[in-house]
Length: 409
Image (cartoon, rainbow, N blue to C red; front, side):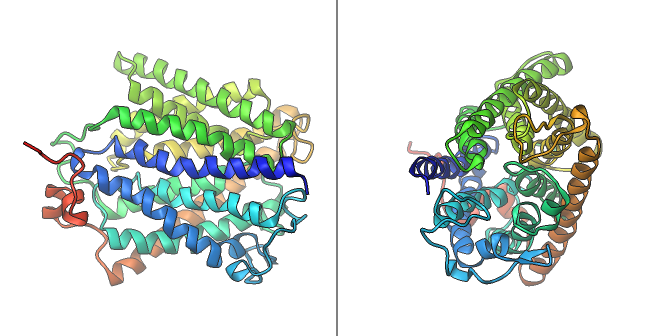
């Protein structure tokens, strides 16, 4: 074991944990004030729920000894056998329990990301049941496919450095399905749905940007040059995407907004995630800039054209940004950055782009079909959507009996 690597991954684990409270602020600022606490609650309760699920069964399903390339076995149920000794299959220089904890934070934030698509209209009990089932039956198998030793997408050669497929594509497309099944918010297009507290959202975006250094650089699993490259690529893509969003928004709407710049940075962070440890800093500029522009156009043009209510643009940022990032990795990846990776299209290996496209299709199909089935199952036992009266009152009062901004006069 290496104490420097262990310390680095421990700090990275804490940084990734910070991202979920950051997401709570990011999403919480974008909803109406009568729904801010219920929106924050989605992210907060997920930390507790999925932390326990990961310890009990999630980790062994995702990273346990392979079963036919589809799922991990139950050998490590309840972290049986996962301790201070390293597991050389995943990280030879850090304790297995530290690797487990680092991956736990990825498992925590992913279902929280989904909540942005159905904000302001899902019942809390349905959210809890759905999130637990989704983490167990969608996230854990997908993590094994992509990262688990023997997982079929990993064996195929798909590259996903820190979660383009596993975290962002899965959550983005799943969120879109939940939004479609639940239907639009009451009064959409008639009542004002403007963000109630943009400074909250900017604070959340800043925490996400900060935590993302642990997300991407930490995925090198060591304090080394690859971690440094992933960190630089992460910052570079976020910066490029924030600028791209501001430029395209000004051209399209006549003004560049603070909300847009914050959203653009998040889109860039999403886009670089799968390739952070495989591409050069110059490539990360292109990945971020194109990612920011694509995500803006999806949210501003495509959502309006098709009329779906992706309330906080989880699909627009994470589904679309993750898809672009995965494909861009197949274009820009180079073994000069990471010999353990592969060359992409621009470096003489066009087949890598095909592998990346296949991995995206597999992820989207699994997430979309699986999410739809889970919603139908959950709907058999409890209503998915709040009543019209609860939605009018606001979910803070009707579901949780609280107000974020009580009237003290």
